[in-house]
Length: 300
Length: 237
Image (cartoon, rainbow over all chains, first blue to last red; front, side, top):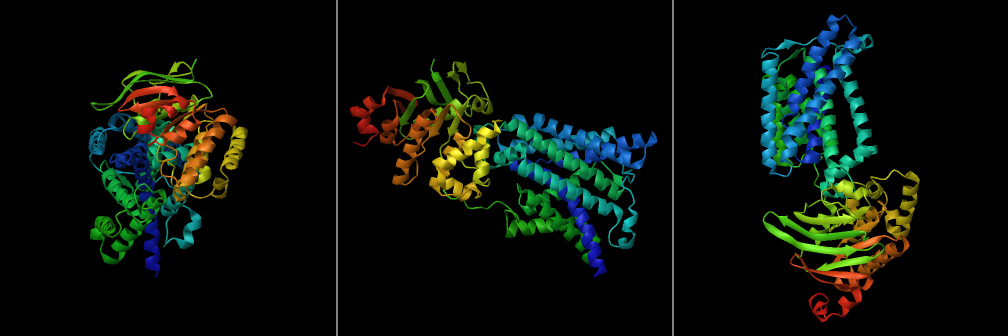
């Protein structure tokens, strides 16, 4: 039973990271109906930015919390700038073309960014310093959950609450929901959809950047290729929950995190990456719209 | 100066010309109707005015300013709203949120509150269903919501695309009365596109007949109602 709880908690931590990335996929898909395959790379770039900025600030002798704060901020800004620019350069010119063109463009951007980071940084795995502090009050429950996992859980819950507030109650949030439901009608009530799309990319990229910093601290290493695997898994999570649905992406991510964690714990860790695809295949057979996918009937 | 004027507007879909030199004038305070058969180009005309479909040549003037190169949201901010064909309610937004979206570009919070009350006064049914998602309303209720959403923008000119389509006969009558009421009480200019030519001409000041992308006739509504050709082709008499 202890073992089970332990696995469940580590699965939850993993799932919440997937959720940070999956939200970017699902929000972009909801609005422009495009799978942004470069999203994983934005997350990887977030991690690298934190590594570089954090390393620089550490050599200046700043304290750990300051380093952490500024490196997260820097990676949010840098990744958002990437997300914003990718949309402008690679997707906007293709918006009224066939959806396949934008998809190919997305894959292209993903490859360009991976190779760019490989050439600009290194192709080796780099150690990622643990910026996340050790929390003394977790001492009694240490064997179930460590500080890093705890911080990941708290941070992601906090971010999801903020995201929900933005989407439910703010003006831009309403515009985003309206645009995802009927783009043309949103324009007819005065929504500037270019602005909405840019904001969506910026929010999605910021979430991915935070996810990048957190997971690199958790794993303790970084490499130009991490965006690909994480991106694919978050994509599976988004599809699992029903692509385009925000609660769906979160739910799908947790299910994926738990499956991986329990699967490695009880079956075999050799198949860690395979579990994601097993559930993807199952969900595509049993409920192609995803768990919370839009299959709502509408009266005419 | 006319409130809205189209001058020699041509619109293409690829190589197919949908509108050929459309010219029409809407004066402030009028109800003007555009009638025509399916595929005549009525919806294209409205979408061209709103900036959704870009026109190839010609001018669209609102208060004498050419809006044909502007973005849809800029055109809305100049006081032009549309009730599109098929109602186009945001299905997952509640009735209140749908209405809120109608007032998207407005900043005058107090007046918006008053306008909420006003549309609930015109359509009490919407008040009852205010927290229900738009997609769960009946067709007639959705039409009320679509009209109300457009009114929430406080437009100076309201474009309506077949507001009577697919509604029960009793309700059709109701909708036309509301259109008349909006025109009189709010002094909103209305440009009404209809297949129900009989009802439309009865409340309109002026009518245009569109056929295969060409304006065939432009007359006062009474004259069109009396016109033999119009009676045969569009009124089924």
